[in-house]
Length: 406
Image (cartoon, rainbow, N blue to C red):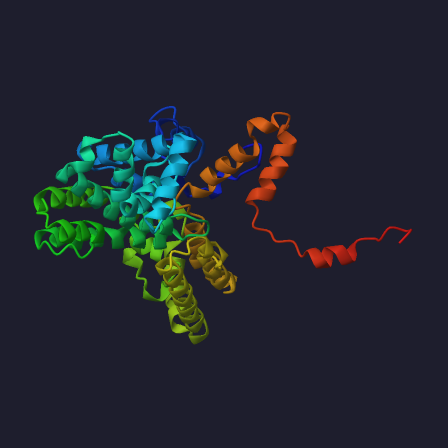
């Protein structure tokens, strides 16, 4: 931080992955940084990490379902002949999917992609394995099969939340809204088992209808309630500051009593006068009313793309934080205390996504096949990979001096 001349007095928040080297009481990065600065800072655990931890509240028998699916998929794909024969077998059976996904033991939630594809192939994969004399007794166990279909459905819900939390330019308040929305969804998932309607668990419902099975509703309801409790226990630092985080999106509905000023070095008296003035001037009121309309349009586009599972297309949309920044940046500096709070909140990182994405990019660039890559070259490649800058190549080419012989 000294090397890059980062002013410590402007740091208001730190997002960590919860590791001991970051959060340790004495030797953790946060503890050391607090010794260097003279003001309070907000420290919180990455929202995406916490969501993944909440998702890991399943009992051991549910985890064993996932492990067996991974074992079966990887054992099939590990042998080229088996892989080819299974692929041909599925094509002959006119399966919806002609192939399986190779899956490694990486991040837990990403395994949902394997589970999503496996149900359609489940009966045919089992038949193919039996043909080869490979027998997994779990594949004929009714409780295991029910756990499997439950896992398919719940990881589908979790993966949708995970997708919405990832990406650059996500406002911390919007991420918190997604988490709270999912918490409330869990409140309707549990009664879904109590009523035995299974509206939100289509794979499990289909299995029950096809096999006339009796679903262990208490077992699955308990799992849902444990997950809900995990969500309630986490994200408290965000929930306690919800009104403050919402200020940047709609200052017109904000009251002084709701806000927390301690980390931001705000002159509360000036802030109160400026907020009152902002609310009563039509020109500035209309600006934030237009901001709400722009954010509504953006949210509608996100919902449309999400419903079509076009997750990569979300990256092409205008970033929410930039829309809000431009609105605040356009009001005069006479509202300096309001802008100070708004820009501080906009500087919050709700997750460590950007940092982890950079490390992931670095690992791809610095492969074993590029062992002569020096630090300077790696830094240049990493900048090209992570930058959001789009050069206007046509303009640049016109400005270049043509070769004298042409």
